[in-house]
Length: 140
Image 1 (cartoon, rainbow, N blue to C red):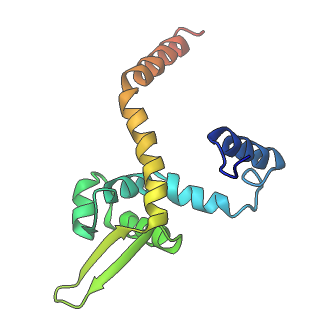
Image 2: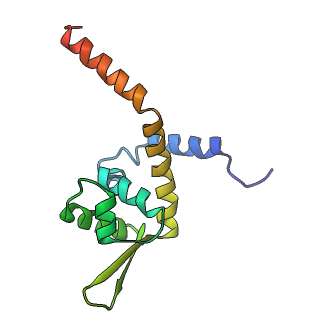
Image 3: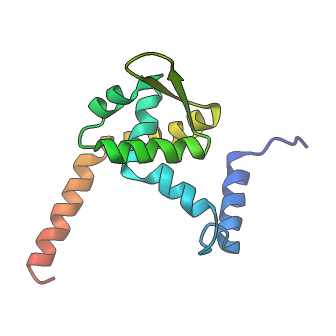
């Protein structure tokens, strides 16, 4: 028998961890990381950086609606978690480049899969949302 885990084994392992309460536990450190990665801005930063290195201003332009403060906080959190490398170049004006680490590439691919699924299924999601909204206004 080989030692390579199959996807079903990995899924079972995650299900076991969920059942034991690690990720669901109030004080589990994974919650903070989930918050960084799965936040609206965290997901979008990771997906944009899949295309390669970007400067702060490029990220801000590509991610519509993000404030400078939120982008800065998101980048700091993702860098602290080991998902992003920050490279400051000694030039005037300051020039900072952001790129994914190997760990960041792994999580970014997961987020890319999620965002791709959402975009492909957006008509179905909006239809379900509209149906529920119509049902709520009918008093159902």
